[in-house]
Length: 311
Image (cartoon, rainbow, N blue to C red; front, side, top):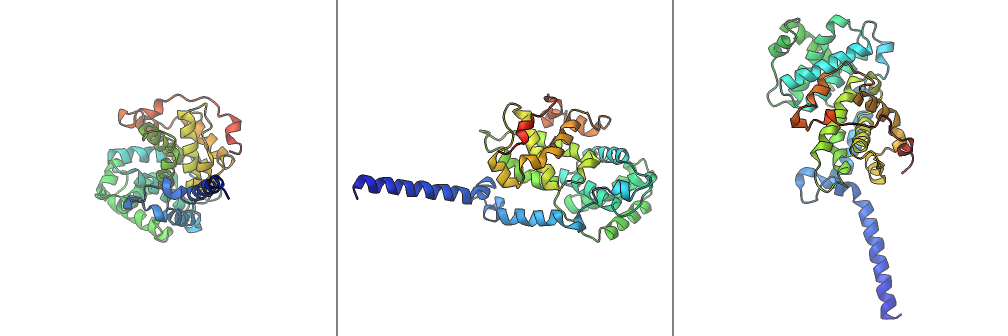
């Protein structure tokens, strides 16, 4: 074999090796540089698999139709009003966003198995937030703070009693992955084709995710699917003329664009106020300069159908 032929074969082997290596470490690369121990890059796939198993666990999932099947005095609109108010409470007490997501998760899970009157819905909300605060916050608000925020509609004893009721109903299974858990992971992939870290994209994702909490129709979706839908819509709003989904995102999230269509369209309607238009707390929150006023960003009225086709 001539030296030239040997060189060509060696070059082909190197290209094949690089391609295989690139495919094998895709998730690890996206999850962070190997030398950054905080990103746990070598364990990224295992962590994601564990989180996915947790999110599908029936013990940690609300019923998708609990208002129709369980509740007699609570409507989807009442639930939306409660969640919108809880966003204000979280802002008032400067709670981390994970506390808000856990709170809504506890509310939905509790209502899936316990009939509640509309007069006690706010009590459920503050008691759930009290538990979530203890789980997530360094300095959680006190019981008295949550009584005060309801204009003392409920006593300290009532809040503590409801707190115990929630814990018992949820069988003390208080840790579960939320939309924010997966959004944190997926955002790094969403930024891969942006030259620098894009804060506007991140804040827009946070905004869309919180909007999804308002709509009862999103309860049926897994948190990872909602997070993937948020990434899809965020990229569409940032670059409407570019297909927001990619093979990398599909591989990393585990969802095809067609899997996300229903959820994406619901969140898009929320963004355009075609749904939940009377719920303003989330919208006002993200009109602030500290969130780069992402709630004011324009959006095309429709998403091209071809964006939901196979990539």
